[in-house]
Amino acid sequence: MPRHERMTTPQTDIRRHYNDLDGFRAIAAFAIVVMHVFLRGAYGADLAHGDGTDLLSLIQTIVSSLGTFVTLFFIISGFGLCCGYYDRIKNAEITPERFYTKRIAKLLPFFALLVLLDIIGTGGKDSLWEAFADITMVFNLLPDLNIEVIGVGWALGVIFLFYFLFPFFVYTISTKRRAWLTFAVSIALSLSCVFYFHKTNGNLDDRRFIYQAMFFVAGGLLFLYKDRIGSMGKIGRIVTLVIAIGALPLLYVSGPAWTTNLRQLVLWVPWMVFAIASDHRIFSNRIAKFFSGISFEIYLSHLFIFQVFNMLHLTHLTGIPSVDYLMTLALVIVGVTGFSVLAKRAIDYGWSLWRKRR
Image 1 (cartoon, one colour):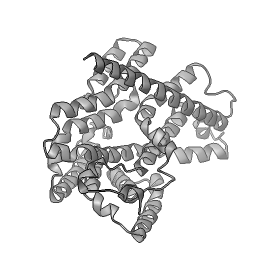
Image 2 (cartoon, helix red, strand yellow; image 1 turned 90 degrees about the horizontal axis):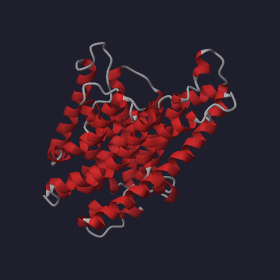
Image 3 (cartoon, one colour; image 1 turned 60 degrees about the vertical axis):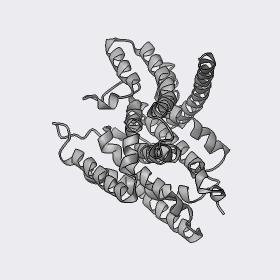
Image 4 (tube, helix red, strand yellow; image 1 turned 135 degrees about the vertical axis):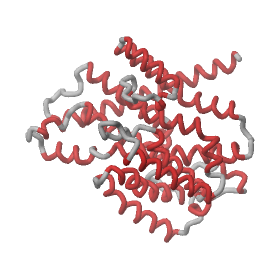
C-alpha cells in the first residue's frame, strides 16, 4: 500500500501530504533556474554565429522549453491550496481575514526583501514605481506587465490573484459538474486571449492570469478526484506512468499559439495523477522535501543571485560557453540555496518575535 494511503478516516484527508509533489516542486524550480541562467548569461550566442560546440547545442536544446515548468507550479498550487483550504472555506471553518492573512504572510515578506535588494542595486524613479506595484501583490492587473524589478515575479502575481479569487474558485468547483463547466470556460478564456484579446501588435502576453487560469482549475479538478486517483491499482499506476513518460516529448513540440496551453495540460496532468496515486522514492525523499520547502524562494531569487555573480565577473571565466554555463549554474544553485535558507530562517525568526510581542 502506498505510504499516503495509510490513513484513518476521511476527516483526516485534508491533512494528507502528497509526497511526490515535493519532488515535482523542486524539479520545477530548478528547471526554471537551468533555463534562466542559460538565457541571461547569453551562453547560446555563439550558436547564432555558427561557432557553438555540439555540447552547447545540446544544452540549448534541453533548456529551450523548460519555461513550461511554471505551469506545473500553477497546477500544483491549485491542487495544494484545495488540499489545505477547499473544505475549510466551503464549510465556513476559516474566515476570509484568516485565509488572506496566512497567504500574504507566506508570500510577501521574502518577495518584499528581494524587491528592496533590487531597488538598492538598480535605483531610479522607475524602479520605485515598479517596487510599489510589486509589493501590492496585484501587479498582474496592471496594463503593462513589463516590470524589471524581480522580473520573474510575474508568476507570483498570477498565483496571488488565484489566492485572491480562491473563495470564489471554491464556489466554481463546489460540485464536479460545475468544476468541469468551469474548466471548459477557463480553456475558452485562454483561447480568447490567443484569437481575440491579444495586443494590438498581434503578440500574446501569456503572463496574464486569465490566460493561465486553466491550470489552477485543472489542479482543482485533480483535487476533486484525488480519492479515486489514490485508489488506483498497480496496473493503473503503471499505465499512468507510461502515458506521462510518453507525453514528455511535448516539452519540445511546437505548434500554433492556441495549442500551447493545451499541450502543457496534456504534458503535466498525467504526471500529477501519477504523483497523487502513490509515493515514489525518486520524488519522495529528504532531499526533495528540503528543496520543495524553499522552491518558492529559489524561483524568486535565482536571477538576483545570478546577477550578483555576473557583477563579480564570475559568469564567463573560461571563455568556453558550455563550461562557463555549467560552472555558473553550479554557483547559482549553491548560492540561491544558501540565500533562500538563510533569508527564510531570518524571516521566520522575525515573524516569531512579532507574534510574541502582539
